[in-house]
Length: 475
Ligand SMILES: *Cc1c(COP(=O)(O)O)cnc(C)c1O
Image (tube, rainbow, N blue to C red; front, side):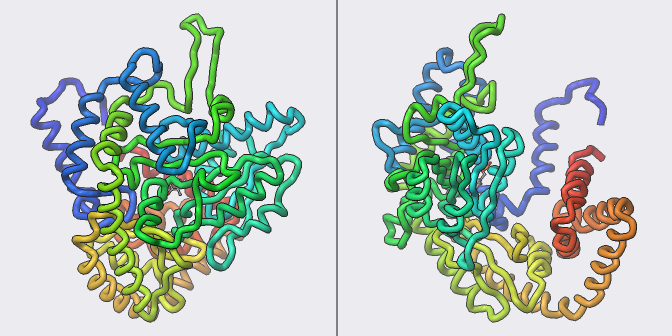
């Protein structure tokens, strides 16, 4: 597309945008289980108005927009209070969970450098269920990620993590809960190990930070996971998830100010002035900060508790019914409203595709193959229909398993091709991926089957990058 020669009127622009939105219908109708955290029109309107009010404000320089500085510090303080921080607890707002995690890892690197200048190749220890943002952080900031397998319950194994500690270790990580199976890692044990070895300990509570405290209140048996645990030095929690704020809002909290200083960046020799910035971004959107502040204030503990009740009920109902389908099983014992299910007898990706044909979007996971669900208040209205359709999808997938053979042949031929003609596989993958992409087509089962086969070959990364390139190129 060429740069427009002439502008068009507002009505036309808005009509086009609304037409675009039709493509994302599943999210609007609460037929998707992730990405969007809907909690009703009331909170939505508040967040929108707050965002618009601060649409142009910029939190780059905290001395310019006094109101943003105040709101950010108040958001951080409210989050710290919810997660059992004390007077010493500080933090920053960031654009999302990824940035919060990037900052926690960067902080650990700086902290270690200061404390022990002999650490040249810093390492972090993470369970293999940890969010890819930790790998991204290591990639960006030149650390090594030491990945420790989770146990059969999908939880981090503290003893194994302790064994992985070396003189280069700077940080140990647990999730509360993990994204793939929604289980809370044994944070108390992990933090105790960190303390014993004088290491930092980060809790990734990106998805749980604004939900777990309310499940605790509702009587769920959640093990301690926040600053109430001795040894926890930082926590990430996303307000744009179960805080129901506008996208672009997360907090990274630290046990004390010394740690947060290790996150800050300063360049004092610029002709443009002394440049100081708390996080990754330069310009920081004021709208996201105002919307997050407004969400917390509008909802309050009682508001979040109400929503948590609805989510808990829906989650428990869904999990019970899914577990009652003989072909399906929930993975692990999810602690919150995030879970996944797999099948020992059926191709679970086929079930995902069948659900897709009925308008539902479920994220595909691997290792093991499973479908992922994040439950929000909006799902209270649709879960019964979801279950009806899921039963249908399972019946359809049963028929597909007879076609499995032909797919296996396809996969085998690709495997063979990969060995003989490693370059040609590129084209093949693109072809298959494009045809079966969740974005472009309806059936992704074949693509995920292929990706699983190619796991760990190194070629996979390049192929996925090529795929991403294709996807992000205007056609
Ligand atoms: C969502 C999530 C992240 C990443 O957050 P983004 O806002 O997507 O960058 C990290 N960890 C967990 C457990 C998450 O659920």
